[in-house]
Length: 278
Image 1 (cartoon, rainbow, N blue to C red):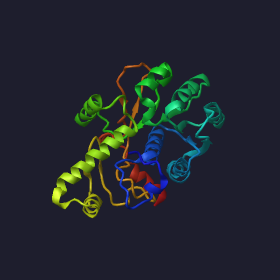
Image 2 (cartoon, rainbow, N blue to C red):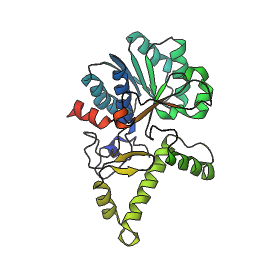
Image 3 (cartoon, helix red, strand yellow):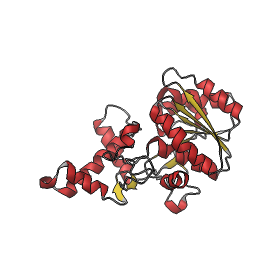
Image 4 (cartoon, one colour):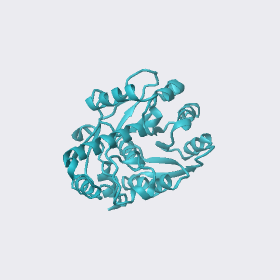
C-alpha cells in the first residue's frame, strides 16, 4: 500500500511501488517552481512520517530550487484547518501544499476560496475522490493533486483496475486502494516469473532488487536498488504525475504534462531529491 510508516520507508527489506508523501510533495514543488512560484507553505499533520518528510525531504527540494519555505504543522485529530489557511494567507506564499486527506479536504478547498488565498493549492490524490469533489463543488476548481497512475485518462490498466473494483469491492477504492492493487499485481508478476517451484522470500527479494525500470501495474516502472530517494531506500517508484479538477462534479480529470513532456508527463522526483540531498 501507500508507504506511511517512516521505519518501513527506511528499511532495506521493504519495497514500495510508490513515492509516498515524499514523491507527491516533490512533484508539487517542481510544478510550482515551473510556474514561477518563489515561496511555498508545506502544511502537514503532526505525525513523525509527515513531519520528517516535510522538514527533511520536501523542504530541501524547494530550497534547492530557490524557494522560500514555510512549514506549518497541525494536529492529526481535530485539526483547525482555518488556522493553517490563515497562516498561509499571512505568509503570502505562492504555493500551498496541504498533506491532509479525508475530512480535511473540503474545508481546505472551501477555506482557500473564502479567504481569497491566491496561492496555488496542492492536495493529495485522495482528495479527488468523487464524494469529496461533489461536496466541494466549485471550490475544487483549479486544485492540483498528485497521482501515481500514468498521466493518461485512457490507460488500459486503469480500466482493468476499475473493472476489478466494480466487481469485487463494496464501494470506491481510490487512494490506498490503487497502490495496494498495484503492489498485489506486481507481486503476482514476480511470482509468475519465478515459477511455483522456486518461490521463497530470498528468491523474491533477489528478483525485486535486481529490477531496473521493470514495468509496474498502472504506475511508473520501478527500480528497487535502494537509491531512488536518499534516506528512503524502500521507495522504488517515486515518480509522480499531477492532475487538476474543474470544480464541476462529473467532469474528467485534467492531467498536467506541460513542462514534463520529455518524460511523458511523469515528474522524476528522484532526480529532485538527489540534487537536493546528494
